[in-house]
Length: 252
Ligand SMILES: C[S@@+](CC[C@H](N)C(=O)[O-])C[C@H]1O[C@@H](n2cnc3c(N)ncnc32)[C@H](O)[C@@H]1O
Image (cartoon, rainbow, N blue to C red; front, side, top):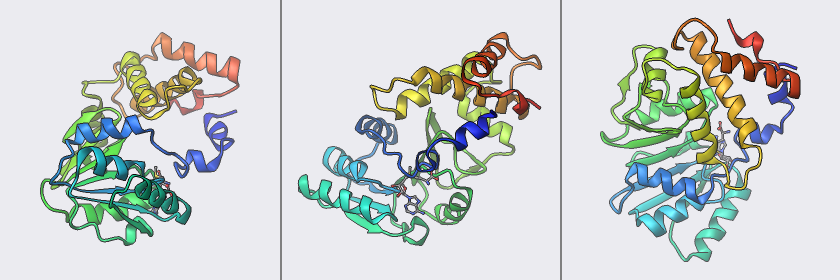
């Protein structure tokens, strides 16, 4: 089956990111990278169970922390966490697209839905100069990232425009072209950064991510050389033979 069909066979709520909750360690990595501090007004857009808001307030003593989620169940969980820890955070149960975020100085935004991203870009570009928006895996549309600690990416207001998708890809990977080793290293960093430590299918995920990164790089013209590396061919074969997952058709 094609990789797209395989992905469709997985639970929709996981693939869409709806049910994805970052572990505590990821929040600390994100906040350290953001240099979150007591003068910050922090917004977690899609705050889930509120763990991020709670850590931002308790451990980084931000001036104000606001969690926004459109799922009332998540907001209820978040309220419980804040109450249990006796901390004051603001929780808003609404679509992030409806919420006033104009006082933000730091934002965590992990969305893949294009309509939401495009809509939010209109709000983000009007934020105060110096506001940091951290995204995961990719920068905001058309932006050159300010700083990258893959998979975490800081986008700074006012945004620097990328001249091309290629320029954006290379800024994220910090290389002149993407080879097998770069694809593997970044795939592994992503898997390690956002999964729980006990995850057992790391390697499987890393192989899929590596193939996706390298094939996308090739199709965008930013892979190193025209030839398909032997390691990529081997992993495409392994996926096909042992897991019946086909990547070949993605190669243009
Ligand atoms: C990792 S975030 C983002 C998920 C999102 N579907 C994506 O495109 O990646 C997951 C959290 O965002 C919340 N969420 C999803 N869409 C939202 C929206 N439009 N407004 C507010 N919260 C949202 C979910 O309830 C969940 O707790």
